[in-house]
Image (cartoon, rainbow, N blue to C red; front, side, top):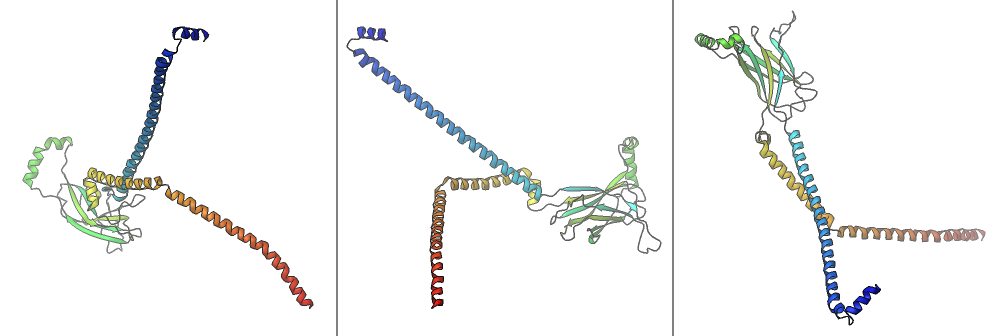
Length: 325
């Protein structure tokens, strides 16, 4: 420092360069550096605030969107029933007792309409269809199919009977079809059979007081020939269910958008409610007033308790004096 001061005294004895050149330049440089540092800190703070706000907005938006989707999915699966239920029908010849005059040996089957729980929704109309796979033989003619729906107590809820038959084919048509499809028939890729569809119920409604648990199928024909039989319960959608089933994407967009709109309204109102702190100060002032009032009441009670013993002690003495007199 001594050598540096000696050099400065030699080079600038009157401190002109130091006072009018170096000092203004150093002051300006320090001011510029300080301003740059302040701007940098401010920009960093602003960037952090913007990042935090952006993160909060993204999280809230993500939560709101997923909440809207979850609400729509919950409504869809609780409001929409299953479209189709398929049950295999195993027909057997009814066994009749000798003294049973009203029993006839017809093919019958009992099909359960429950699988540990009811799959028919109350208020939803259903179509109950019986599909019969039948060979094209001469024994199969016209027949009647009856279906009886019962509840847990085996009480009849609904009954329906439908008549059906195989589609007619002339001998000439049978001969032509046999020659045309002979290779497929020989190798087993085609069979001489028909699928007969019998619609037992076109608009069946389940009752909550007597829920359907099973259905009895009876074919009123002794000589009927069958390969297999299946029972189909098809939901006949109408109104909102029809729209949600036939236009699922459009319904999902409308439902999710509606949920998102209402959830955003609730969030905005909640934000403004919690952002306004006047109600918090009002609650704090009311709480302090209540505390002060309780303390004043306690003080008054203590004063009355302190005064009452003196009065109690005075009254017996006066009574004793009166008795003595």
